[in-house]
Length: 286
Ligand SMILES: C[S@@+](CC[C@H](N)C(=O)[O-])C[C@H]1O[C@@H](n2cnc3c(N)ncnc32)[C@H](O)[C@@H]1O
Image 1 (cartoon, rainbow, N blue to C red):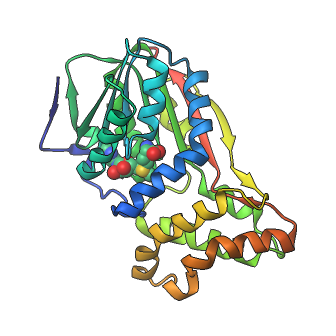
Image 2: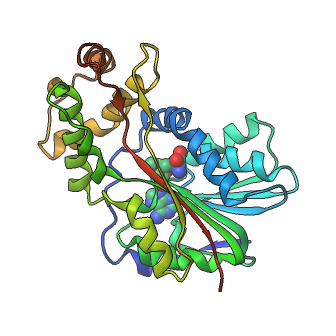
């Protein structure tokens, strides 16, 4: 049983503006995102030790992509509880779980930092969510109270500070996109270094240093889905890019963006990098 308390002591400082918005386009983008990052999330969950029969809490479950992966791993004897602060997106998540014939998922609308559960979970998982929280370390420590001793903790977060390293004189478009992404996330208050920050977040909460991997989807094939995915990122970012006076719709040119990136890959002979991210897992000892 769960209860969503009305007060949240963790939100005294401001959370980041959710940079990518809450439109139906954003829901579609999350599903596309999973086609790109899903494999590494699946690998993270497997490496971390999520197996059949486990009861897993997933925070920031969005359109349910990580939930679907977890539901498959825990099987019909396990359970996945997804929590998201955006109640609307959970309708999509519930529908997708129903379409997949899953009976082992439950979705709760609310702030993940603000829930009570009568039983602890075997594992807690989150993807691309801590970066938006005002005080991720404090939030994380609170989330750990929902995990059993010996339970699994597995998170995946972007590491934007590494992204400029691949800028190059032959790729002006990619350079510009990276600059815009870093600027808009920084203006929104999101943590650009949440991926590397996972180490400190885990150890400050009393967990053993996590096992970590750095991953970055890279593509150069004409048919690679990453070009179009980057355009969908910019479609979601555009309202804030304009609000913060960082770029205009005309400058971004969402409609032609995927084709222009592909063209630049062709002419520069340099592959295109999507934002790097870091996976981290450990177990709760005490
Ligand atoms: C970038 S999306 C990622 C969604 C999903 N984890 C995935 O990877 O497909 C981040 C999600 O976290 C949710 N979120 C942000 N802060 C939250 C909080 N404090 N509690 C619960 N959900 C939160 C947002 O509403 C959004 O759906």
